[in-house]
Amino acid sequence: MTVKTHTGSSLHFIACIPEPSIEQELHAFKLELLEKYQCKAALKSPAHITLIPPFPWPNFQDEKIIEHFKVFQSNISPFEVIIDGFCTFRTQVFYAKPVDQPILFKLQSEIRDYFEPILKDKLKNKFQFHPHITLANRDLKAGDLPQIIQEFSEKNYKVSIPMKSVSLLKHNGSKWDVISETKL
Image (tube, rainbow, N blue to C red):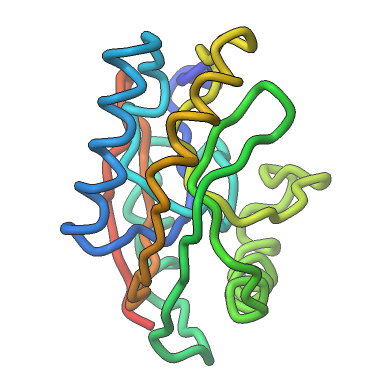
């Protein structure tokens, strides 16, 4: 992924990040995938469900995007996301799988509707929201996937994640940092 889109801008995205104890559990899965399969790309961000994919934003206007973000008010109250096992997108992404929950789609729609006029042409028009928490992606080897699926299916991982806020993240040149948060 190219981090700098042109001189003076960085990539940002908007996501739901689990509370620290659950984020640490999911991070441990990423570390296991690093140790066994050399998958390190997903370690560059905290565990999250992407609501608005990466978009470029001028660095000199960081305060402006943070202010827009803080002004956003959702009609959605805090809610629970149930993670039940793991899944894949073809051979390119291995992820923790949220149970289908309409409230996530409603939240994503609210945020997209609010940010579309602000971001204009910076949003990917073809972004299809498919809630997931990536554990391995760009450096995942297709040949390793059957073994990963087998190993992780034995974990019987199921957790309820309280979602109480939405976060704005910025790429610092090597990893993603949370730069603002707004409560639901």
